[in-house]
Image 1 (cartoon, rainbow, N blue to C red):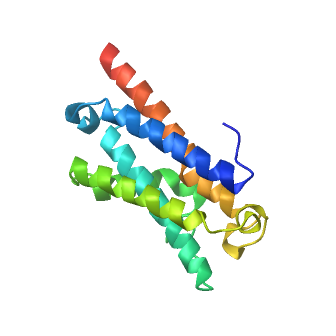
Image 2: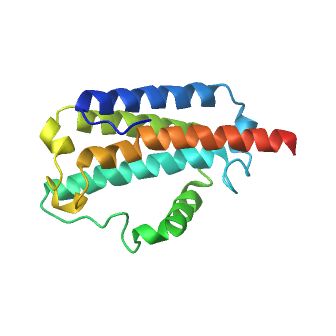
Amino acid sequence: MPRPTTKAALLAQAETEYDALMAQINRLTEAQLCAPGCVGEWSAKDVLAHLTAWIEMFIGWYAAGQRGQRPAVPAEGYSWGELPKLNQRICEAHRDQPLEEVRAALAAAHQAVCALLRPLSEAELFQPKMFVWTGQSTLGSYAASCTSSHYLWARTEIRKGLRTRQTA
């Protein structure tokens, strides 16, 4: 999937990949969604919580930047090189959350990020260095990473994990 270079493409890809992920998830039973070992040790439910957390972090980064702050990206106390550790912390924080809460939180986060992106201009989304906290990257690139690209990753990993569990 090519990186979007327009707001229309960014939003369309986010919606398309989200819908595809939800279609995949809706075909699975609660037992399939909650069983560990789907993506590494994670269940599919853990993956959904992971997606939610990353969208919420993105929204937080943007909000902090709008207040003139420089957000801790990816998270306070973590560097990009420590993503496995951060992702595991996210997983553990949501491990006991009920499936329906996880699903509702992802739906709400997806709607919130799309609502955040819709009023932004092409320049705000795709002009490099528009925001100090994005560095050389663009806001649109961060948004795609936390939405469409992440949804595609989740679908692919869940499908592979389920296939692996079925053959084991």
